[in-house]
Length: 262
Image (cartoon, rainbow, N blue to C red; front, side, top):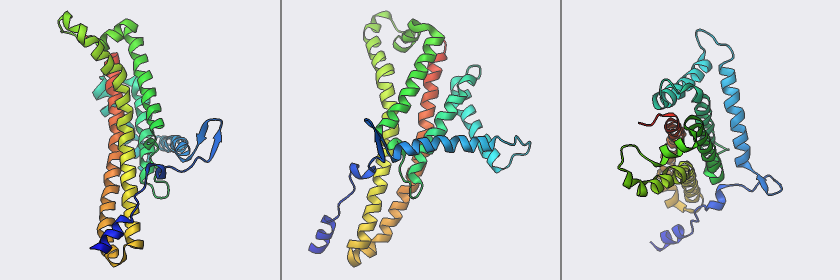
């Protein structure tokens, strides 16, 4: 029992500092590191894949064209038409399509061996993505409803007796225009950060059991490996779901910007 306790006490789990490598180089105060490289690479990957998928325009699509068309159709119909509305969704399909696949690829980097870093596990990347979405749907709302009409739709729910607006206006302003973009970014960041850290802990534990755990470590290592594999596929599923959730909320916000007040 004493030896087991000493072995377990020797395990040092990874820290937040271990999650990200040092920057490759600096340009003034800007650090160019692995995360920045992956964000740029994701743009190339998404653009190259869909350009290649759309190149032939065959009546009977090949596998790449079929996957590309299925991906586009999913975003167009499920996240565009069904949420924004059949008469208003078309202008917003490109931005929703780009948002979904850009986030998806940057999340999936965390599940690719030897890369293993979801770009949105950095809070700055999540803030930038949510900031773009925020500016976009606010601009759409102001363009469609005017400045006063947009802020009225965001802060004054219809059908409420006017005395209640004294309380509702500041609450709705805080909820819709301050808290909403913060939660939009933190939801994406927190799930990628937590999943990445959990996988690192599982990998560290497996390595520790095999190298420092002795006979007991070798006996328990298969269970640690199975648990790590479970976490891997769970994180893979969450990476896809978070790309969907972020884009779904983006579409919901746009719908609120173009919908007529009742």
